[in-house]
Length: 310
Image 1 (cartoon, rainbow, N blue to C red):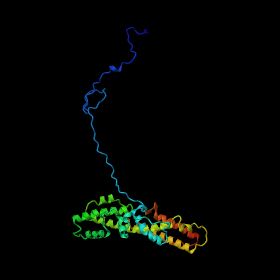
Image 2 (image 1 turned 90 degrees about the vertical axis):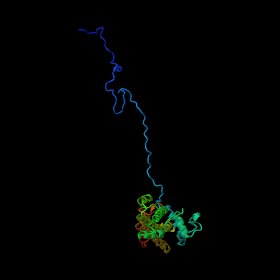
Image 3 (image 1 turned 30 degrees about the horizontal axis):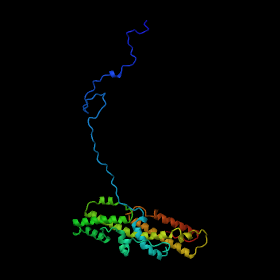
Image 4 (image 1 turned 60 degrees about the horizontal axis):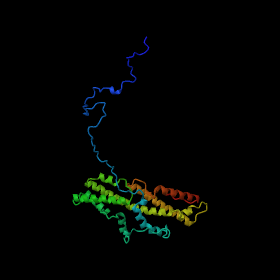
Protein backbone atom coordinates (compact mmCIF):
# COMPACT_ATOMS: atom_id res chain seq x y z
CA UNK A 1 0.00 0.00 0.00
CA UNK A 2 1.25 3.48 -0.91
CA UNK A 3 1.73 5.67 2.12
CA UNK A 4 3.68 8.62 0.61
CA UNK A 5 2.71 10.86 -2.29
CA UNK A 6 4.21 10.34 -5.64
CA UNK A 7 6.96 12.67 -6.72
CA UNK A 8 5.00 14.20 -9.60
CA UNK A 9 1.72 14.67 -7.63
CA UNK A 10 0.95 18.34 -6.77
CA UNK A 11 -0.97 19.04 -3.62
CA UNK A 12 -2.18 22.65 -3.47
CA UNK A 13 -1.33 24.33 -0.19
CA UNK A 14 -4.10 26.99 -0.50
CA UNK A 15 -7.47 27.23 -2.25
CA UNK A 16 -7.71 28.59 -5.75
CA UNK A 17 -7.17 32.37 -5.65
CA UNK A 18 -10.21 34.60 -6.20
CA UNK A 19 -8.44 36.21 -9.15
CA UNK A 20 -9.16 33.18 -11.24
CA UNK A 21 -12.90 33.81 -11.01
CA UNK A 22 -14.53 34.65 -14.30
CA UNK A 23 -17.10 37.27 -15.07
CA UNK A 24 -20.56 35.69 -15.21
CA UNK A 25 -22.64 35.83 -18.32
CA UNK A 26 -25.34 37.79 -16.46
CA UNK A 27 -23.30 40.96 -16.84
CA UNK A 28 -25.63 42.43 -19.40
CA UNK A 29 -27.07 45.85 -19.98
CA UNK A 30 -29.73 46.82 -17.42
CA UNK A 31 -32.85 47.92 -19.25
CA UNK A 32 -34.04 50.04 -16.30
CA UNK A 33 -30.83 51.92 -15.57
CA UNK A 34 -29.15 51.73 -18.98
CA UNK A 35 -25.87 50.62 -17.37
CA UNK A 36 -23.49 48.33 -19.39
CA UNK A 37 -21.13 47.69 -16.48
CA UNK A 38 -20.37 44.35 -14.99
CA UNK A 39 -22.10 43.16 -11.89
CA UNK A 40 -18.67 42.99 -10.31
CA UNK A 41 -17.90 46.67 -10.95
CA UNK A 42 -18.55 49.34 -8.32
CA UNK A 43 -21.74 51.06 -9.45
CA UNK A 44 -21.26 54.65 -10.56
CA UNK A 45 -23.89 57.28 -11.27
CA UNK A 46 -24.07 58.32 -14.90
CA UNK A 47 -25.29 61.86 -14.02
CA UNK A 48 -25.86 63.96 -10.90
CA UNK A 49 -29.45 65.12 -10.74
CA UNK A 50 -30.21 68.29 -8.83
CA UNK A 51 -33.49 67.97 -6.97
CA UNK A 52 -35.14 71.32 -6.29
CA UNK A 53 -37.50 71.19 -3.33
CA UNK A 54 -40.14 73.85 -2.71
CA UNK A 55 -39.38 76.21 0.20
CA UNK A 56 -40.81 74.98 3.51
CA UNK A 57 -44.14 76.55 4.32
CA UNK A 58 -44.22 78.18 7.69
CA UNK A 59 -47.40 77.66 9.68
CA UNK A 60 -49.74 80.62 9.61
CA UNK A 61 -49.53 82.41 12.91
CA UNK A 62 -51.43 85.43 14.04
CA UNK A 63 -49.20 88.18 15.33
CA UNK A 64 -52.00 89.92 17.21
CA UNK A 65 -51.48 89.99 20.97
CA UNK A 66 -54.51 89.20 23.10
CA UNK A 67 -54.67 90.20 26.72
CA UNK A 68 -55.72 87.31 28.99
CA UNK A 69 -56.20 89.24 32.25
CA UNK A 70 -58.40 92.29 32.84
CA UNK A 71 -55.73 93.67 35.18
CA UNK A 72 -53.38 94.03 32.21
CA UNK A 73 -55.98 95.50 29.86
CA UNK A 74 -55.93 99.09 28.68
CA UNK A 75 -59.53 99.43 29.82
CA UNK A 76 -58.59 98.82 33.47
CA UNK A 77 -56.17 101.75 33.39
CA UNK A 78 -59.00 103.99 32.25
CA UNK A 79 -61.50 102.59 34.78
CA UNK A 80 -59.10 102.99 37.70
CA UNK A 81 -58.16 106.56 36.84
CA UNK A 82 -61.77 107.63 36.38
CA UNK A 83 -62.88 105.93 39.62
CA UNK A 84 -60.01 107.15 41.79
CA UNK A 85 -61.78 110.27 43.08
CA UNK A 86 -64.81 108.15 44.11
CA UNK A 87 -62.54 105.76 46.01
CA UNK A 88 -61.20 108.72 47.95
CA UNK A 89 -64.69 110.16 48.49
CA UNK A 90 -65.94 106.82 49.86
CA UNK A 91 -62.90 106.79 52.18
CA UNK A 92 -61.77 103.46 50.77
CA UNK A 93 -58.34 104.93 50.10
CA UNK A 94 -56.42 108.06 51.04
CA UNK A 95 -54.35 110.18 48.72
CA UNK A 96 -51.40 109.85 51.11
CA UNK A 97 -51.35 106.05 50.96
CA UNK A 98 -52.48 105.57 47.36
CA UNK A 99 -51.30 108.37 45.05
CA UNK A 100 -53.45 109.19 42.05
CA UNK A 101 -52.30 107.31 38.93
CA UNK A 102 -50.49 109.31 36.30
CA UNK A 103 -52.45 110.38 33.25
CA UNK A 104 -50.78 109.75 29.89
CA UNK A 105 -49.27 112.97 28.53
CA UNK A 106 -51.36 112.81 25.37
CA UNK A 107 -54.54 112.83 27.50
CA UNK A 108 -53.66 115.83 29.63
CA UNK A 109 -56.28 118.57 29.34
CA UNK A 110 -58.93 116.21 27.94
CA UNK A 111 -62.45 115.97 29.32
CA UNK A 112 -63.90 112.58 30.39
CA UNK A 113 -65.44 111.87 26.98
CA UNK A 114 -62.18 112.63 25.21
CA UNK A 115 -60.27 110.41 27.65
CA UNK A 116 -62.79 107.65 26.98
CA UNK A 117 -62.15 107.86 23.25
CA UNK A 118 -58.38 108.20 23.68
CA UNK A 119 -58.26 105.05 25.78
CA UNK A 120 -60.40 103.15 23.31
CA UNK A 121 -58.68 104.30 20.13
CA UNK A 122 -55.22 105.68 20.98
CA UNK A 123 -53.99 105.41 17.38
CA UNK A 124 -56.94 107.37 16.01
CA UNK A 125 -58.02 104.71 13.52
CA UNK A 126 -61.17 105.06 11.42
CA UNK A 127 -63.79 103.28 13.51
CA UNK A 128 -67.56 103.23 13.81
CA UNK A 129 -69.45 104.62 16.77
CA UNK A 130 -72.22 102.67 18.44
CA UNK A 131 -74.84 104.90 16.82
CA UNK A 132 -73.34 104.42 13.36
CA UNK A 133 -73.47 100.65 13.81
CA UNK A 134 -77.05 100.77 15.03
CA UNK A 135 -78.21 102.98 12.17
CA UNK A 136 -76.23 101.12 9.52
CA UNK A 137 -77.57 97.77 10.65
CA UNK A 138 -81.17 99.03 10.57
CA UNK A 139 -80.68 100.63 7.14
CA UNK A 140 -79.27 97.42 5.66
CA UNK A 141 -82.12 95.35 7.08
CA UNK A 142 -84.64 97.70 5.45
CA UNK A 143 -82.68 97.62 2.17
CA UNK A 144 -81.94 101.32 2.09
CA UNK A 145 -80.63 102.26 -1.35
CA UNK A 146 -77.98 104.54 0.13
CA UNK A 147 -76.52 101.74 2.26
CA UNK A 148 -76.76 98.81 -0.12
CA UNK A 149 -74.47 100.30 -2.74
CA UNK A 150 -71.14 98.58 -3.32
CA UNK A 151 -69.12 101.55 -2.06
CA UNK A 152 -71.14 101.92 1.13
CA UNK A 153 -71.02 98.20 1.87
CA UNK A 154 -67.25 98.18 1.41
CA UNK A 155 -66.85 101.22 3.69
CA UNK A 156 -69.01 99.71 6.44
CA UNK A 157 -67.28 96.35 6.10
CA UNK A 158 -63.79 97.85 6.39
CA UNK A 159 -64.59 100.13 9.30
CA UNK A 160 -66.49 97.39 11.15
CA UNK A 161 -63.42 95.15 10.99
CA UNK A 162 -61.21 98.00 12.22
CA UNK A 163 -63.61 98.77 15.08
CA UNK A 164 -63.61 95.13 16.17
CA UNK A 165 -59.79 95.12 16.22
CA UNK A 166 -59.72 98.33 18.30
CA UNK A 167 -62.32 97.14 20.83
CA UNK A 168 -60.72 93.72 21.28
CA UNK A 169 -57.28 95.29 21.79
CA UNK A 170 -58.78 97.43 24.56
CA UNK A 171 -60.18 94.46 26.49
CA UNK A 172 -59.29 90.75 26.72
CA UNK A 173 -59.27 87.76 24.37
CA UNK A 174 -62.74 87.19 22.88
CA UNK A 175 -64.45 83.88 22.13
CA UNK A 176 -63.38 84.03 18.47
CA UNK A 177 -60.02 85.47 17.40
CA UNK A 178 -60.18 88.24 14.83
CA UNK A 179 -58.51 86.40 11.96
CA UNK A 180 -60.94 83.47 12.32
CA UNK A 181 -63.94 85.81 12.45
CA UNK A 182 -62.82 87.80 9.42
CA UNK A 183 -62.06 84.65 7.45
CA UNK A 184 -65.62 83.47 8.08
CA UNK A 185 -67.08 86.79 6.91
CA UNK A 186 -64.54 87.50 4.18
CA UNK A 187 -67.09 88.34 1.46
CA UNK A 188 -68.40 91.90 1.41
CA UNK A 189 -72.09 91.00 1.36
CA UNK A 190 -74.99 92.71 3.05
CA UNK A 191 -75.48 89.74 5.35
CA UNK A 192 -71.83 89.67 6.44
CA UNK A 193 -71.75 93.42 7.04
CA UNK A 194 -74.84 93.15 9.27
CA UNK A 195 -73.16 90.33 11.23
CA UNK A 196 -70.00 92.39 11.77
CA UNK A 197 -71.99 95.48 12.81
CA UNK A 198 -73.89 93.36 15.33
CA UNK A 199 -70.61 92.13 16.82
CA UNK A 200 -69.33 95.71 17.07
CA UNK A 201 -72.43 96.67 19.06
CA UNK A 202 -72.02 93.70 21.37
CA UNK A 203 -68.37 94.62 21.96
CA UNK A 204 -69.34 98.21 22.78
CA UNK A 205 -71.97 96.95 25.25
CA UNK A 206 -69.45 94.61 26.85
CA UNK A 207 -66.89 97.40 27.17
CA UNK A 208 -69.34 99.75 28.88
CA UNK A 209 -70.32 97.08 31.40
CA UNK A 210 -66.69 96.07 31.91
CA UNK A 211 -65.88 99.64 32.97
CA UNK A 212 -68.50 99.43 35.74
CA UNK A 213 -67.23 96.02 36.86
CA UNK A 214 -63.59 97.10 36.92
CA UNK A 215 -64.52 100.08 39.06
CA UNK A 216 -66.17 97.69 41.53
CA UNK A 217 -63.09 95.50 41.37
CA UNK A 218 -60.93 98.46 42.39
CA UNK A 219 -63.12 98.83 45.49
CA UNK A 220 -62.76 95.13 46.32
CA UNK A 221 -59.00 95.31 45.88
CA UNK A 222 -58.91 98.35 48.15
CA UNK A 223 -60.84 96.88 51.08
CA UNK A 224 -58.94 93.58 51.13
CA UNK A 225 -55.41 94.98 51.09
CA UNK A 226 -53.21 93.24 53.70
CA UNK A 227 -52.92 96.34 55.89
CA UNK A 228 -56.50 97.53 55.45
CA UNK A 229 -58.90 98.08 58.36
CA UNK A 230 -60.89 95.01 57.33
CA UNK A 231 -58.00 92.62 57.92
CA UNK A 232 -57.15 94.30 61.21
CA UNK A 233 -60.69 93.60 62.42
CA UNK A 234 -60.73 89.99 61.20
CA UNK A 235 -57.50 89.21 63.06
CA UNK A 236 -59.38 89.54 66.34
CA UNK A 237 -60.02 85.90 67.39
CA UNK A 238 -61.67 86.75 70.68
CA UNK A 239 -65.41 86.31 71.27
CA UNK A 240 -65.91 89.86 72.48
CA UNK A 241 -68.76 91.75 70.77
CA UNK A 242 -67.90 93.91 67.81
CA UNK A 243 -68.07 97.70 68.12
CA UNK A 244 -70.68 99.35 65.91
CA UNK A 245 -68.05 100.99 63.74
CA UNK A 246 -66.54 97.57 62.95
CA UNK A 247 -69.97 96.13 62.20
CA UNK A 248 -70.60 98.91 59.72
CA UNK A 249 -67.25 98.36 58.05
CA UNK A 250 -67.90 94.63 57.66
CA UNK A 251 -71.40 95.28 56.36
CA UNK A 252 -69.98 97.74 53.83
CA UNK A 253 -67.33 95.23 52.73
CA UNK A 254 -69.91 92.47 52.23
CA UNK A 255 -72.05 94.84 50.15
CA UNK A 256 -69.10 95.68 47.89
CA UNK A 257 -68.27 92.00 47.46
CA UNK A 258 -71.89 91.14 46.73
CA UNK A 259 -72.30 93.91 44.13
CA UNK A 260 -69.11 92.91 42.34
CA UNK A 261 -69.98 89.21 42.33
CA UNK A 262 -73.46 89.93 40.96
CA UNK A 263 -72.21 92.17 38.16
CA UNK A 264 -69.53 89.71 37.08
CA UNK A 265 -72.04 86.83 37.08
CA UNK A 266 -74.47 88.80 34.90
CA UNK A 267 -71.60 89.83 32.64
CA UNK A 268 -70.61 86.19 32.12
CA UNK A 269 -74.18 85.25 31.27
CA UNK A 270 -75.14 88.16 29.02
CA UNK A 271 -71.86 88.87 27.25
CA UNK A 272 -70.82 85.52 25.85
CA UNK A 273 -68.13 87.17 23.76
CA UNK A 274 -65.77 86.12 26.55
CA UNK A 275 -66.01 82.41 27.32
CA UNK A 276 -63.27 82.34 29.93
CA UNK A 277 -63.92 83.22 33.54
CA UNK A 278 -63.42 86.83 34.58
CA UNK A 279 -59.75 86.97 35.59
CA UNK A 280 -58.12 89.84 37.43
CA UNK A 281 -54.52 89.87 38.61
CA UNK A 282 -54.13 86.11 38.03
CA UNK A 283 -57.26 85.32 40.06
CA UNK A 284 -60.55 83.79 38.90
CA UNK A 285 -62.43 86.64 40.46
CA UNK A 286 -65.80 85.07 41.24
CA UNK A 287 -64.10 82.26 43.16
CA UNK A 288 -61.88 84.81 44.86
CA UNK A 289 -64.88 86.87 46.05
CA UNK A 290 -66.64 83.76 47.35
CA UNK A 291 -63.53 82.81 49.34
CA UNK A 292 -63.40 86.30 50.85
CA UNK A 293 -67.08 86.04 51.75
CA UNK A 294 -66.47 82.72 53.53
CA UNK A 295 -63.64 84.24 55.56
CA UNK A 296 -65.76 87.20 56.64
CA UNK A 297 -68.74 84.90 57.27
CA UNK A 298 -66.65 82.68 59.55
CA UNK A 299 -65.50 85.71 61.50
CA UNK A 300 -69.07 86.97 61.92
CA UNK A 301 -70.14 83.53 63.13
CA UNK A 302 -67.36 83.63 65.73
CA UNK A 303 -68.67 86.98 66.91
CA UNK A 304 -72.29 85.73 66.91
CA UNK A 305 -73.23 88.29 64.29
CA UNK A 306 -75.64 87.73 61.36
CA UNK A 307 -73.89 86.68 58.15
CA UNK A 308 -75.39 88.29 55.05
CA UNK A 309 -75.10 86.03 52.02
CA UNK A 310 -73.22 87.25 48.97
